[in-house]
Picture 1 (cartoon, rainbow, N blue to C red):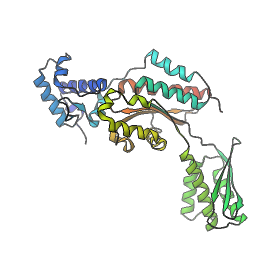
Picture 2: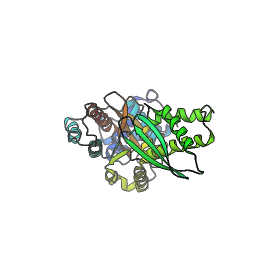
Picture 3: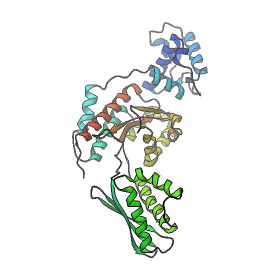
Length: 354
């Protein structure tokens, strides 16, 4: 449902809408007309405020939970607030110092990311999440070594000297020449590239019949690509801290939503897909509730920003996940500052490689 734009709201409606959203974000409970009337600055009676609240509800910006006479913002309303009303400020000196202290401890990439996500979690009252840099080495060679009539070893050699092996099962016995042909084919197309960069082109070449491989070699190539793709998908790519922050007093009224969110945070692959949507962004991305399919069941929000290496390439994403009543104005600049700090640190080669 598309709600009205800010220009379609009267000044009085905008003021009341802003106060409802800010009150809900601060307290986690519906905001009623008496609360608004007592907040000062509106100079309106509770009856007049109730009339405006009903208009905002009819417009799809607010909703009235059946257990309360107050109003809460809908996802459409939160989006309007975030895009058009919210005013963000720079993180405070204390917030900056807390984030930087964790990163200044040095050590491995993983330890620095854990410190960053823990700081974000503590400061935001949500769950801090940082996507670990994807391990996508530039490749030098791939080969197939026979182990038995129905098994082969796939050996991947990277430009940095790293070697990784995987065993694949063969449906039928394969001649050594077939193994060699499949290895030569992949090496010619992978050298100097990452697997992700080359895989799509290889798959297209095979599908279009331009590979000049026989059926047995083609099957081997597909199996070789599949075993590495599957392996990469299973690798941990997230550091998550602060799930306990999601169990605050307001969550007691919505335990099923919180349960669903905690389950989602346990699914590394699912959350990685959510954060992947922010990888190509130039600035902070905010996903509210059903705007992201994977988070729609829990009605949660994600604030995420990509961070980069010394060459400006995106290597990961840092963010906060929590209920839709996250304090967006405060959390957005903190996430952005953390991403900048991570980018600066990795650009200075501030991580150990072990």
